[in-house]
Length: 114
Length: 113
Image 1: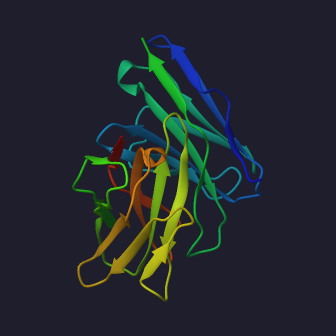
Image 2: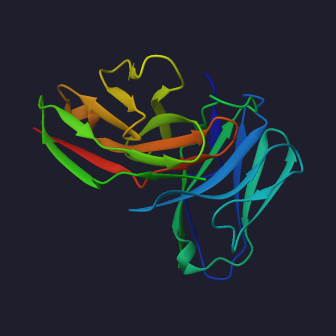
């Protein structure tokens, strides 16, 4: 059974804290993605990675950074958390094959910044 | 670049009634189309996808969607919904030669007893 796991389901942090969200996939996928999900806005792409040590900005990268040191792991970092980063964060992975490669999602991390 | 519109943010429907969730997209290139479902407190799961061939695609739990190129639509339908279909549904598009998805804002389907 293919799996994308995220380190926490729920997280509460204080403004200004450094926050790490971890994502691990066991499908040997090249591509990994971080989205945030907010009501009425759907999923918005924060960062993605096509390979180890590679990263590309998505649509809303401000306030975030990422790290991909190993193929199976993709970390999202909030250097100094702010209340407007309270959201649901979803990680996804997909195979590199161009075309019909669907994305597989983790269960999400609901982050609250106080 | 692509974009996806889901005009209905919420759709309440009674159990065993039919439902249609609308999805329209825009793209300057050929695309693949997807519907994902998100049950409460879970991540997204693929429901069905259109890649090529027959424009009507079906899922294992009775949903179907039809790709209409001239209207740039990919509406999702089910002839008789169950309480367990209550979830949020996302339409997504991906360029044939790209790696990234573009998701719509989602439609929350509430099935009432």
